[in-house]
Length: 155
Image (cartoon, rainbow, N blue to C red; front, side, top):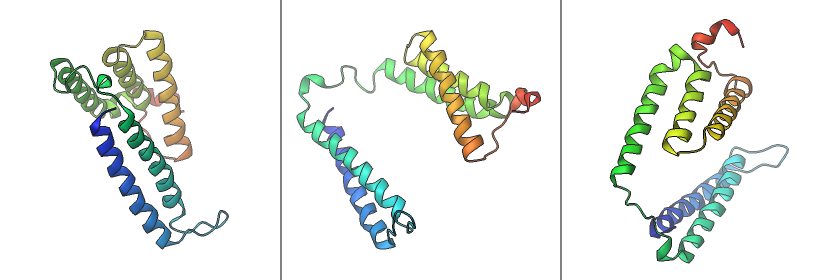
């Protein structure tokens, strides 16, 4: 953690203080009858605590813990370009291949190729993330995710 973490953590802490104040003005209500500011108030509290932790950790960080590779290094730039291309392909192929296949392949690429994780780990995490995202979006939020070439399964 470096100086930039302290700056960004401070920004988010101050922003959360503003959110907490404004949501309090909207009205909190009670636990059983929440007001319009209830969710934003408690979310602001949680994020403010996390931002404060980041700020405090950045003060304790030593210069030896700074990132070894420059953020504009050739390797980092290549990774950024590959991720942008992968996200573009994710959006383009979503309708044709469907949510399951494209999401699984995206996470496989990110974990196995970009982050260089072991293949078994990449497969396991990709499957878990895809299933979790499906359950959240399709089941809980009742959104219509593209089925693509798996339309015949009717899941």
